[in-house]
Image 1 (cartoon, rainbow, N blue to C red):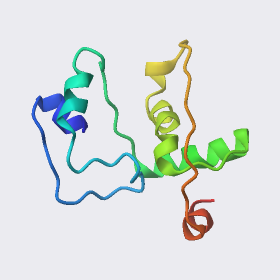
Image 2: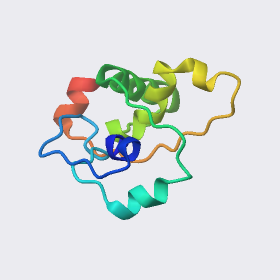
Image 3: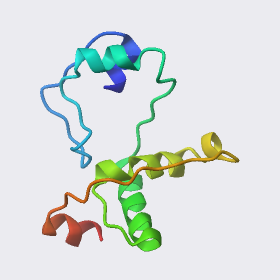
Image 4: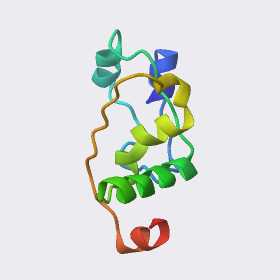
Length: 107
């Protein structure tokens, strides 16, 4: 999605490889890209190790078990602290769509 947004044209992928499968976009929706124009000013990609760390921190400090897609906001903050310093930030934590195997592996 970020590739399409940055290039201004639909960029598709036959396959994507991410643990954040809830937000992994192989084929962007054209209307969604149009909706982003003028509204979205920046997009950040995060490392999957940071994503797992963010999931663990959310569980530790909030007592909530979230899936990788739900932790990307915190992961972005961890990797880009200068963008968020002295700013009010809200994170929406949704989704605990995890398998037992994923829980055992990441937590």
